Image (tube, rainbow, N blue to C red; front, top):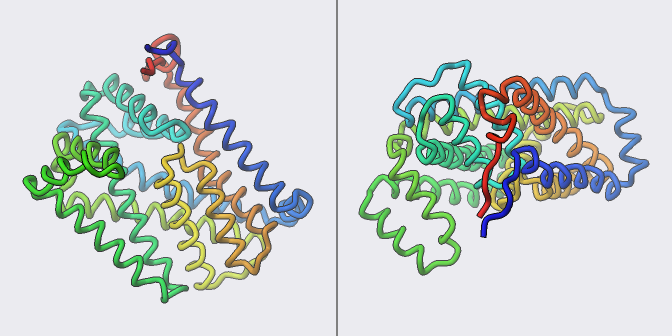
Length: 329
């Protein structure tokens, strides 16, 4: 039986509440007094620098999304509409993937006329290239820890093999049939099937390579944001610090993706705070402060900007009024 219709704002509430609880939980675990002292002595100019790097991240992720829309959508999406749609989609990161992509697909349909099902497959391909970019970033992060590079190289090769495998339809179809017998693959492979049928051109080698490189640059910018935060907390710049930040960020992002939690909320913060504690001489107050500042600079500020887009462009997207609703089954 269908549940009552919920506005898009109601869909955000659980993720926002969870995010706030996680940030306060980090302060408590890191000792609220010590974490507060870290904030007091923090050089806030580096927070502004981290926000700047975050803007670079959003810019390149937007270019990747714009590329996917124009190549896979078989029609030209204006730059203005594409920017509005991308920025409006950021707050949906705190919803489940299914609900978030459904809203994005509906909004894209309203603005461009692209069928919703087609739009959702474009977004799924975008997520696949994100995963490839994260694997590349993990490999770069092993600069500081060369003993780990064989493992990450193996994972990267397996990922590339999977992408190549999808190019050969008979093999891919066989794998899709096998998913019925493998519980772990039941939820993943049907999504890949949608991508293969709906946007095969985006799974081509050159298209995937280009979008993955754009994703890599965007994630490197977020890694640089973490470096800025740690320098603001009193660390000196070094390439070793850069390697740590890239590895910590990439691994935390990967854990967030695997968890399937909205925006990795909770899992991302736990992974980052834990790794920073291990790498920063077991100083949990610094790890907690760095994680909180990083998430504020790179995620929650973008979330607020997205809400502003909803306010000013809500009528166009159908957010305002009863149009901004879906029915959950």
